[in-house]
Length: 109
Image (cartoon, rainbow, N blue to C red):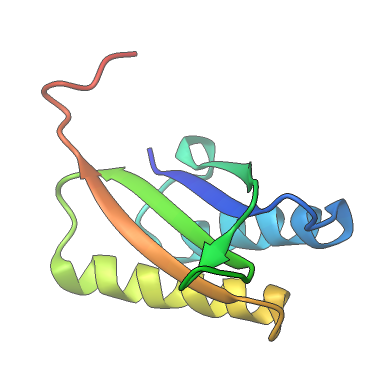
């Protein structure tokens, strides 16, 4: 853990996604909260995105991690990941980051 799931418009190309996935991995690693081998990053294309009922693309990063980090650590990671998203997406679309704590007692592998 963590698992970073990047939800994006289907038409976002590999020329954007490949460097972004690498940058998200490095951002999580640079936080000092995780070992490189524990970080998972994947993309999930979204079909027919709408905002306020209008065809408008958006992106969101869901970060799943086990409990145990402080709120300050989670906020710093969230802000760093959002900055990484914004750097790679420029002004093409809005982006958000959601931190989701996974209960290790009920997590199965």
